Amino acid sequence: MISTQSNTLREPVSRRATEPSAVETRLWQHILSLVRAQHPGLHRDWFATMTPRQLSNGVIQVTVQTPAQLSFCQGQCQQPFTVAAQQATGRLVAVTFHCDKAPLGGVFNEGDQLVPLNPDYTFENFVTGPCNRLPHAAALAVADKPGTTYNPLFIHGGVGLGKTHLLQAVCQKMLEKNPAARILYLSCDSFINQFINAVEHGEMNGFRFRYRNVDMLVIDDIHFLARRERTQEEFFHTFNTLYQTNKQIILSADAPPSEIPELEERLVSRFNWGLVARIERPCYETRCAILKRKARIRQLEIPDDVICYIATKVSANTRELEGAVTKLQGASQLQGIKIDLELAKSALGDSVTHDQRRITIQQICDAVTKYYNVRMADLQGKRRHKSVALPRQVCMYLARRHTRYSLEEIGGYFGGRDHTTVMHAVRTIDTQARNDREMARQVSLLERAITGSNQN
View 1 (spheres, rainbow, N blue to C red):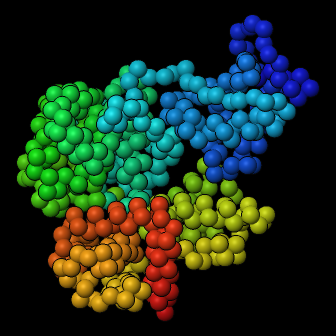
View 2: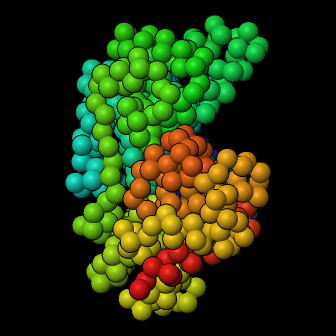
View 3: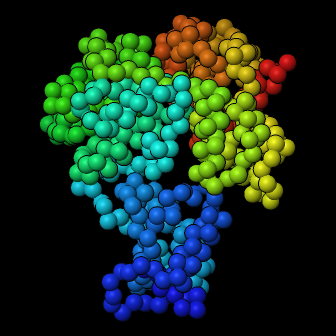
């Protein structure tokens, strides 16, 4: 436990951990309050379940309840908690995190490294509604009886709708029930790259052993198997091995199996053996519930009229709803005022999404051709030069983000391009916008032009 006297910590000589004293409890609560004040976006409700131990050699050991919480704390909390502890004690101390329930198994990536799951991605934190009730119920059933119910489970839907949340929730629930379970969780890109590397280096035996000796295989964005004939062949046999031994398989994609182009029929058939469940965009009531849940997790007080305002204006996906809460929280803290409707309109004015049903691909193309000084014929043509390819990819990205057109419809608009071309464009621009300020600026300007022209 943490021990203190006159606001300083004392080193223990030798004693077993006991319940913290009243003074120790006050000190720990002071550390938590400092972290909450200095890093509000970091705070989680389960911080209250942390157990501080005595100071030993200048280190405060803090015990958390689950491996997922441990991964989160080790990745994001070490420095904030250490600074807060030093401020609270007036001493040069460090904070470390431990978990007494470290699993024998775990969630691993393609390199056999433990994957840090997001402790917020649990079934308890997943807001259900008409848009996602089926995949949520199916994921719960799979977590309860892996390998027997809905195998495989195939979840599909657009970006930011909660597929990753459900995948990780299943992983965490399964580990709670069976800490020795071995789960392989990775992207389809990683599977493809590992397969190519194994072929080039003659390591196929090791590759097959790694992927076929797990209790559960979880692969995100499985649609990237399209056009990969040899990789599809290998995954077919991996699938069969796992299925025949009652090991759970969970896959996610942007589209249902039947709509993934150039995916072998035998894979389409197997992906449909279990349950194919679609996540749709959240309805208004679900968006309100999501906003309230995000506010509660961050211990934010957001009035109902502000919740309604955001839910009305931001309708694309859960990720954008969370982004709106983050932006509103930042504005409130920077200006030192409580959250109200006036602040929400001011802070979110440039980022709220206007009625997406009224935005057309042609409106997007008009804005893009004007900004990049290209012709519409270029966007729909076959030229692949960067001066044309980039604006075309931006168009596809914006169309996917701001319209309700399917991937096939978007591809068809741009010269009959297929489903995977659009997916690649969306992923490319999304990555560039997150990592390159200039691309982020261009996308932001175009989004304002599109939504601004759509207000009348």
